[in-house]
Image (cartoon, rainbow, N blue to C red; front, side, top):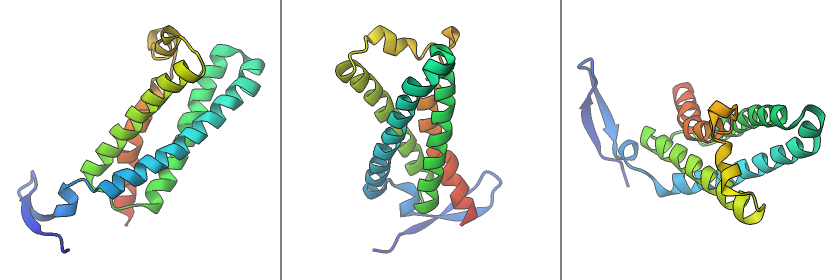
Length: 159
């Protein structure tokens, strides 16, 4: 089926066209992004294992938390970069939806796995989101929400 196009006008008054696929969410794109999120979880679990086995014993719990969060942010950026390099062509709406999906799944997984599987009390899980206490984990769901738009737009400009 061919996309229908319509004329749109930018803020500067110039005309452009928009296709149906640029305006709507394609379920297959969201399903692929959800599958990619599973790979992100694997990266996060490997990072957490590295933190507990190597970092925390070597530098202490707090420094291990910070270093682990920074290394996870970098690893997630690499995975998101590779994903959007391979699967370019998302609409802005899809990129925002993928970011919200990844961030929501991340928080749900952390609280669900952390509490029900690992037995971590809710108060400890919530404490990781307290920037005033020096906890930096909150940057992970923020990154999960923003990386899709950042890398998706990067590869759109390059193609």
